[in-house]
Image 1 (spheres, rainbow, N blue to C red):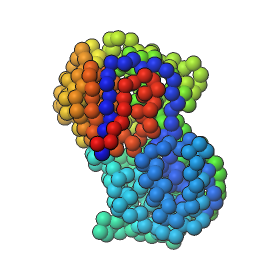
Image 2: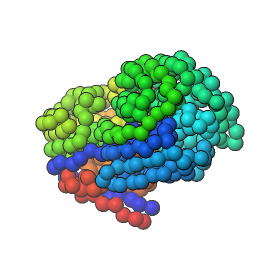
Image 3: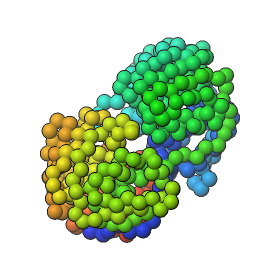
Length: 419
């Protein structure tokens, strides 16, 4: 099993590109099932989750051509299998996203209940209830969701709580439904907006992307198109924090600062200098010492839960006491015990992490517990004295493209080894 070894103490300096967003790529790939025409997607990141979704489409009958430079071309005219098996779905919760498109276009879907990171409860009941309101007959049997419908119809659906994948799944299903669907309390994330833009390019009629109310007027069919996936805002912010904790000076290209207003403000509150030399470039310069920053995670446009672990590392090295409240997932502090092994002074009180900044961290063997936790351990290793050995790094390959290569290009002493 692969491990990543980080020898800290090197300020990151240089320029690297940001990859396409994983969380925009996965729903876009699922959305290709809504048409039998050819679809071309570019700026696709090379990630384990993307590979899993492509394998899932392939077993449905999709014809897929992958060019690492040009992107992915998909032809779904031959889709003839509507079952998403446990062996694929168990590794990635986003597999549930094929349910809406399959039911909308083919009238049936059989999806294994999904797996993914063990960071708390992320039920699929809102997906099921929404499709039922749109006329689907759904049963749960032997770990599978079985859905059928002659043709879905429009409905008004209130999503409580707000759900990103639920919004995406129902928006895709509504694109081919008969009549108007209104999604209230819809997710506002940039990845949801990117999916709406992509669907509209295919001929969908979606209004309100980026707001909490989506209005979708169903059409008879969708057609082929081309689409470029937006930059990954979580990868962008992760590298920004990496620059901060190493007191570096880096520039990120192919980025989108407009999707990161809240994290950028929190970094500035910590004393980090954030500049925009060009619209798609972000420069980060970090002084020593850093200031502690209080924050609370919440759905977009609030502070992303996917950056909570990274900011725990920053606050662990800041001068003073800070508090981070996790309000999105109830089990997302599993990385704290591993950061404590490196010398971080973090105390958990329910859903609040109280962080007392320390002068330095010390390298040690640690274990990744989920995708973003693995990134936080890499960041901690970059700032720590000595060597940090991170095991179970298959988590990080689900969401970060060539992270060790990018960090090495910025001057980090980092390598991947196979045990």
